[in-house]
Length: 162
Image 1 (spheres, rainbow, N blue to C red):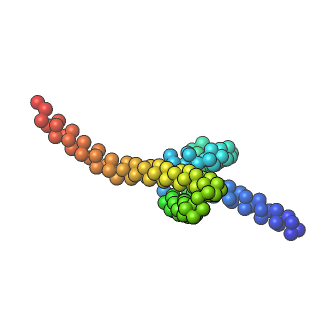
Image 2 (cartoon, rainbow, N blue to C red):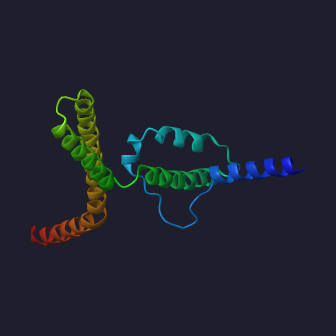
Image 3 (cartoon, helix red, strand yellow):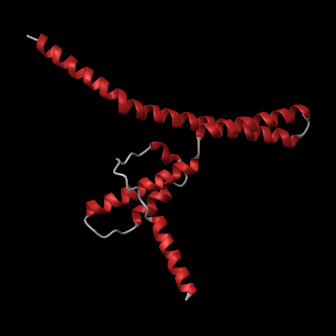
């Protein structure tokens, strides 16, 4: 009896974990930066292969809501990019200070090379993320101002033409 209840609870948890979605009515925003994640295709494939009964528009909406939740989970797993850069920098500093004390140790030399690679990757990822976010902010805020400016300019030039 307890085993059956336990199995039912486990199945319910699996279904709940697989198909949770955000209940807020916000728009679906997709960050291109997520495409570079190794789990991206697996997440999209898992969500998109699931059969949902209903009108095609309902199916797509439900899958997009689930994808939104899964993408948020991917972001949480990635962590804070600035914090990752700081950690890599500190680890590299510690390794280099140890290498100053023991310059002949090959293990420390190899560790320093590895730390430099990790640090440079962390900086690259942070830069790509910040560039992507800056582009999103510009498209959201500044592009509206520019379109307004060009509309006003078009109206003024229209009146000046004979």
